[in-house]
Image (cartoon, rainbow, N blue to C red):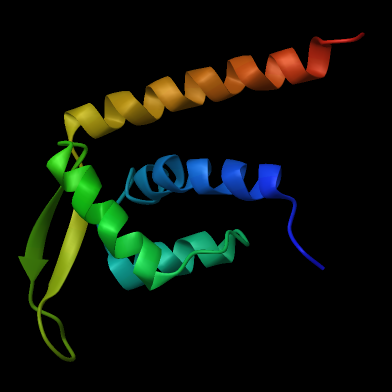
Length: 107
């Protein structure tokens, strides 16, 4: 069964705010971000996440720091900047507005 293109586009648009939300309360490295997304049944791939993390860093929404790993090479931990917190808050406000519109239109 093929996915509805409208829902695929919506899901693609939700990836950025979900990644921001995933690092809102604690720093995480990419594998932890992917695990958090999969935990809520959001399909995400490494091949999509890494370029997005680079874009978010270029846009000043996240910052990263390298930390030693207890097993293997150092890991790049991602955290929100103040601009990232503002962006996430703006998304949540917009999402609430959209939800109210969907719930009330046609009633």
